Length: 217
Image (cartoon, rainbow, N blue to C red; front, side, top):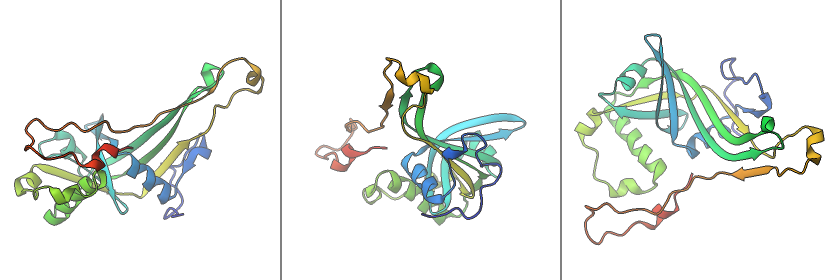
């Protein structure tokens, strides 16, 4: 198992339900790689903001992107941000409303968002975004245009202050409640892609790649 570079900081260390906390990079990487949707929280002019977007990882660096005209992207550059990724795995049905819960995997990261300016680094990171989601698709696409690079702001953040929080397993009820005639257990939740739908303007005769019907998170 890949261990964290150092002990977790007070900022990321779980204070409650601490047994659900994980700080090794292997666990953190697996969750980040399994869920591309994240939320980015930051403050601007003493106002809180939370922006949903796509994230992807290259080594120990997290990336996300947006329009160069986006006020949110401009505001994040050089700012302290908090990034969260959460995967819902199941509803935990207990014998009382109080003990109902969910099984989940989540990662919370803190750091400073840095703008990627170098053209080749920016291009390679954007190519990696597509490759992470759809392996091999870049080989079928036309090259990225310079105007597209200019229209895109790319931000990144080293994965340094991060923690994972995970809940698994059945419900935990009061001892006396286990004898009650109430169904309890787990309703699993899974995310999977539907069947691909071809674009109406697709050139005639182009088949749907078989791999696209097997995507799942």
